[in-house]
Length: 275
Image (cartoon, rainbow, N blue to C red; front, side, top):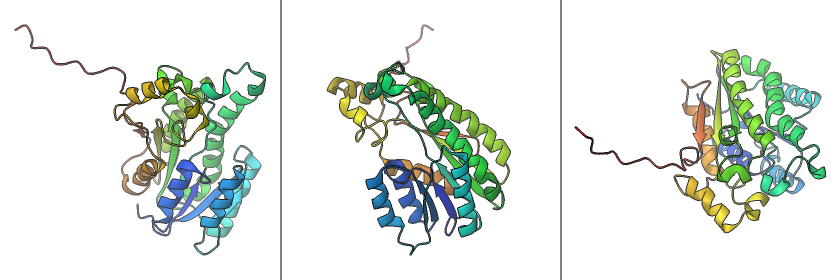
C-alpha cells in the first residue's frame, strides 16, 4: 500500500507507542489525525510537535469511550480530509495487579468497566464510526493493538502486570479483528499486533514495573526468549509493516513479544532413539 499523502487516525499518540507510531507515519508523509483526552503535559508536547498547522495534521480532544464524541471526531475528519485510509486502534486501560490490587478494593470500583470500556468497546466505536470513510478508499487498513494478556491472563510472571478484566478485554480484541476483516474485505485489511512487555507499556517506564522487585523483573525477562523488553519504536516499525507492506495479510495477528509466550519451557534435546 502506498501511504504517502494518505490519512491516518492514530489513537493514543500523546505518549509511548502511539507517539512512536505517529512519528513513524509522519516520516512517511502521512497526514495524521491525533485524538487526545488526558496526560496534559504530553498533550502540550504533542501540539508542539504536530499541532503547528504546517503539515496538515489534525489534533482534537476526544473521549473515545463516548459514541457522540467519536462521531464528532469522524465528522471532523470527513470535513477536513474528505476520507480516511488508515486506523491505528491503539487505546487501552490496563490495570496492573502489582499497582492497583484486586477489584474488591474501594479504589477499584470502576476499574473493571474502565478496562473493558477503553480496551475493547472504544476500539469498536472507532471502527464502527470510521467504516464509512474507510469504504470510500480503494485500499484501507486497520491495525488493532492488543496484548499477550489475552493469551496468558494472570498466569506466570506476567500475572503481576495483567488484570483479569484487561486480559479478558484483550482476548475479545481477537474476535473483533477477525469479524472486521470479514466486514472490510476486500478493500479494507484488518490485522492485529499483540504486544508483550514494551517500554512505557507493561515494561520500564511504568509505575507497575517500578513496583516489581529485582527478582520479579528478572523472572519476566528470563521468561522472554530475547531476554529484554521491546521499545515503542520497534512496535511502530511493526505497525508500519502491517500498514504499508502486508498487502496480502488480513484477519491475522502479529505477536511482538520477544518470545514471552513461547518462553518458560525449553525445547528438549533430540534423543538418540532406540532403533
